Length: 171
Image 1 (cartoon, helix red, strand yellow):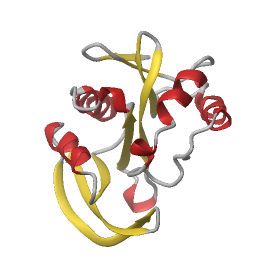
Image 2 (image 1 turned 90 degrees about the vertical axis):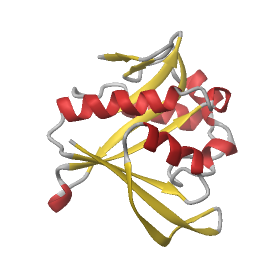
Image 3 (image 1 turned 135 degrees about the vertical axis):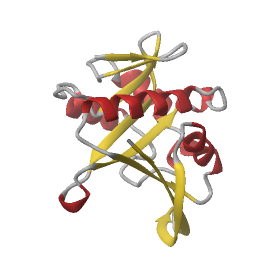
Image 4 (image 1 turned 180 degrees about the vertical axis):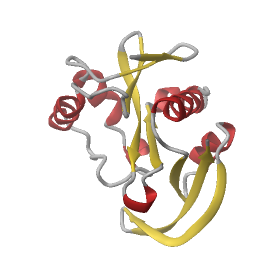
């Protein structure tokens, strides 16, 4: 299963992704605005754990490696919610700093959004963005997501209290 963008591919994770994953993910400028479950520093042990965890994902895929020439330069995934939120998925993504500002992640968000609405039994995709990450807010807006609100003082990242901006797109 692959989705093709302009100069990049979204695909499932495979053995051999660990080296490029660790190389591109080990950057505090990337981890600065992600959930704490994204390790920093991002070690080879972390990369091996991640790839082994996702190597045999069933279809439809929920988590994709973003690759150029088969080198992992980012990741994007969906996390289905449960209970009364069961028709909603949460979106998360990261991209190598070398590729920031080139439209890659915006296109990846659009591809995964279209894929999710076609392949998953969901009607809504939601993403939370920390208040000090306006670049990610622009990514979502360019991909058609709408800011629905701001949860004040909702997160603590690196000891700092921040707001979370809530974006969503509806099928």
